[in-house]
Length: 349
Image 1: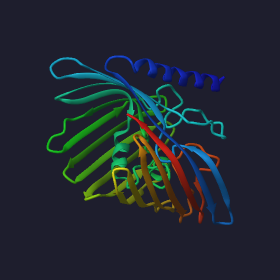
Image 2: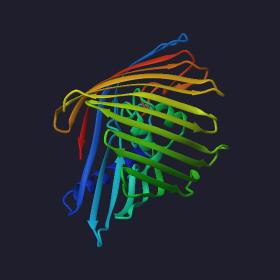
Image 3: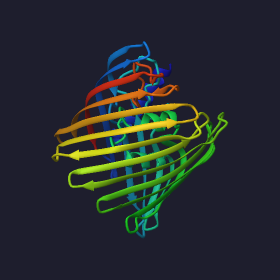
Image 4: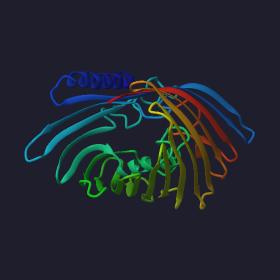
């Protein structure tokens, strides 16, 4: 019954998107990532090898509908509906809904109004603190070999805020300020996020703070993010620092450095090194990742990437941020996970 229901909801989302594509002021967009990943886990007397199909080696999969209409006095109103999904049924039996909750339009479902005063939005939308992480991540927040496994899975930073109210100021002299409030839901007692960003010339920088009270957890999830990108010719040099507190970790820190080289309009290389640690629990994870992307036709990119993740502590750590796969999502003391991933990324915007 659950499978029939979720398939029906997906079909409804896609049918609505197709119908809206022809409406005035309304358009559809999508991002699709299909790949093959081969992973070897070794160390501590344990070895595991899997080669499998993965939805989203680099990026999440979703389809969305957006609409916008001019009102008056320079004010515009609009909406966005976005659905995340898998390109295959995971062997674990988890829901077909991925990259968001098990619901219709699980990634975005909000109304907004914007004008000279800035932009206000209400509904399910991106977590602005997570957006700050993406700006400073050297590997664009790849699902293999980036900061996301530690920051989101271990650190508990949500990628999406349900039922949120947010405001983003106009950009003045390169500076933008954002804030959002998450009221009480079935899973959280409430939460706040604040972020500031600067972008002018070769420099882009961001700082953010978040706080979430999760029902059933004794400690508040909170954290701060600092990230920056500096452009030097064809290179983007990136750095980030994230400090987080959860019910498990008092001071989980993640530091990352690296960048991207735009060799041509079609060819890009990226690389990053990351260390995540919490002294109180002996959590120590070291990650090295590198990738190459080649856009061989418009909007269609082929990629290959390699990730090496080692657990140097006594607490289990995640080794990827990909959707459910055939492998366990964590490695134990002394274990190393090596993943080679090749795929296609199609963007329709």
